Image (cartoon, rainbow, N blue to C red):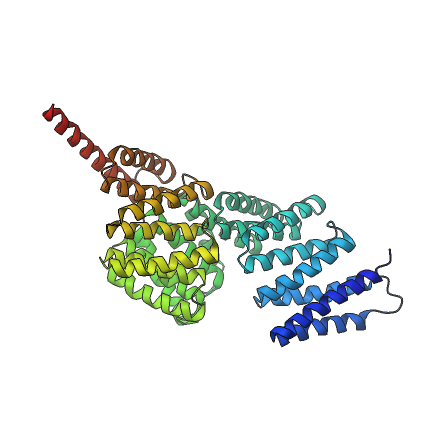
Amino acid sequence: MDDHPSLETLQKRVHELTATYHARGWTTEATALETAIETASNRIQPDTSDPATITLDELTVCVKRWLYAKSWIVAEDLGILVLDTCESLKGERDSMTMTAMNNLASAHWGRGQLEQAAALHKRVTALRQNFLGESHPQTLASMTNLASTYRSQGHWDEAQKLDARIVEVKIETLGRWHASTLSSMSNLVISNTHLGRYEEAASIARQLIDHGEAQGLPKTHPSLLNWKLSLASTYRDQGQLDPAEKLERELVAVSVDEFGTHDSFTLTCMANLASTYREQGRWADAERLEKEVVASSEKILGETHPQTLMSISNLASTYRSQGRLEEAKKLGEKATAVLKEVLGERHPNTLVAMVDLAVTYQLRRQSPEAEVLAAHALRLMKETIGEDHPFTLSAMANLGYIYQSQSKWDVAGGMAESVLARRERTIGKDHPDTLAALEDLRRVAYVEAADRNAQSTLN
């Protein structure tokens, strides 16, 4: 096969991309492409049989550098070009083509194009499983990337299954306490927690922490901090608020001291502690922390970053609990609208914000708007994260509350029964959320019984 026509086509497309970047004023990126082509040309010898591969190799270095720098747009632009050329020249089974797929999928993920990222990660994972085997490091890397994308999409069931398999394979091939295995176990904790499998999540998290401390890891070690963060979140979701607060206060103190208040990890720790304060009804403490998180997030991450938007939604929830409904409505509408643009309407974070806003509408006596929004969000949650997911059950409970306020007791009663049954099955009879569902059902039953007695008396 004569590769030189392919080389000419590749060089032409790179030249066009370089010209585009110059026209946009992206001089650094344009210069990087020119340097890559020049370096490749210097490497090509007259008797070289595969000059296109050398050029692709240099361009791949550019893509990886831009991915590392989170320059997602240019990484995607060049990633598309490299993958197209690799597929045309080498076919999808070639290792360079698979690397190009993985790189482009990462660029899609960085740009928030999660469906494209998942499709490409799924494709390269299947190829590597078939041709390299499931236990090959590159296959495991692809599986890990695919699971991460599933988590970003809120597809927790798919993520958990893949995370569990990755851990199983790594334990068999690398050993339980290998650094790569520990990292995958940490991912499994996150997926289990979001599926409401709290006991499993907490057990794995405690294993990780105990191992890290036994190995003498300093308290500021990133892995140890992340494991503690996951365990604290699991405690909070289980309703164990005191141990959650204790661990989160420790994490905030360490991260502020080590990284400062304008660090993304510190902001996450502060936001989690504020969530625990909300669960405890400590509204003033929650508001203080959340305002700080919002201000720092807008400055460090940007006003449209999902983490910033969720912090705004959390602050709106706190305002609502304090009776500051107009402020809660304004912030909730802002967060929900931008989350729809950034993540899409079906993303779990967007849906949670929609449900939260519906509650605010209801308290402001905007019952029709509240019902429409809550019902729509609940339907999408059932479709995307499943009927038993904790988020879905909270949305169902909130919609049931709206129906109660409208005196739609039959519908409200059916929802209350469903929420209680599903919570008993998924998180246990003693969980605070389950007990709240039981109390809600009793309240509906009491009103229905009172109505029946009143009707009987009239008759």
